[in-house]
Image (cartoon, rainbow, N blue to C red; front, side):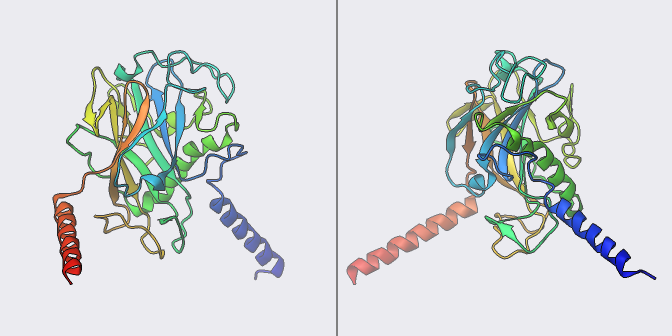
Length: 310
């Protein structure tokens, strides 16, 4: 028979576990007020080379959700106190990490990888949302195969959402620990970075990212340009997907084409040019959407004409 003391200890332990889960994605020792969980993180690493992992904050992921216009020159991964510029990776706001910088021709180097990820919370709660995103809403990239070809949309089991959210948060929330003098980027030694742990690269491919995404979520660079998207001569292109763990909370934004939790919705493509400039290219509406928009425009024009002749 359980005593009141035993019941109290069990209840206390349960509440402690709940609190630990709720705050699992809170950046430890956060000193960077410019970063918040849920911000989209662009990260770089090099397979088998001297360059060390590098991350840069692109702002709230929700800013790119269902965007209808291109957003050019969001950030530059070459300029700044920490960057992929030749040699500038030695010594940064996070100390003096061992290793060197990416080579001057980093944008032509197939051993250099980049990816995108964001998550606000790994809580399994299904009753609330923030800015249209319930807990465990994941933003993650996939390598775009060609200028006119979209990558295959991610579709994962809802049972893996907590694992993916926890692992993404573990990596991305390191940005919350950087000094305020270096507000949008983080450079780390491999001993402290989770970029390579959560995105294992190999000589001819990638391992499973965040213990969830088979084949990885990164794109690697290569000789020559990738092609032109949205007027940008891209060296690399990453399609961005948003994945909902639940559609239940009132106010949840459900992206076009999504019918089931776990299905990824295409939100647009991020491109990087050889100057290091990062831009977002909004998705082009499907033909059916163009038809609907055109019909709406004609209807609006007809109504205006009728009003004028009334």
